[in-house]
Length: 67
Image (cartoon, rainbow, N blue to C red; front, side):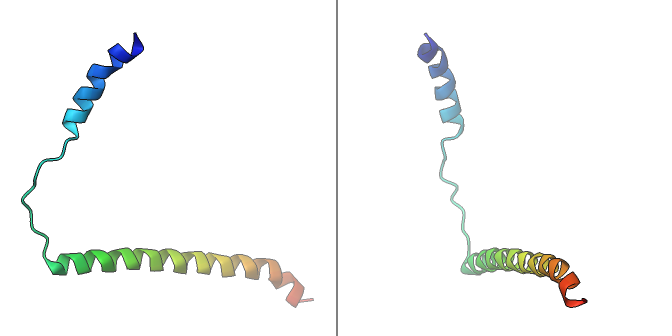
């Protein structure tokens, strides 16, 4: 009963998400820009994590150095 009720919805959703040819062109410069943006994103995440790690580390070790 449930399978026969869900099947039309699965077919409709599948038809909506079927991809068609776009006939689009991405030049090599765009690929390089996308790769650079992705690498920059990961570098920014790494820098941010490192910055907060050292702030947290200094917060906990600060009281021990001043005694």
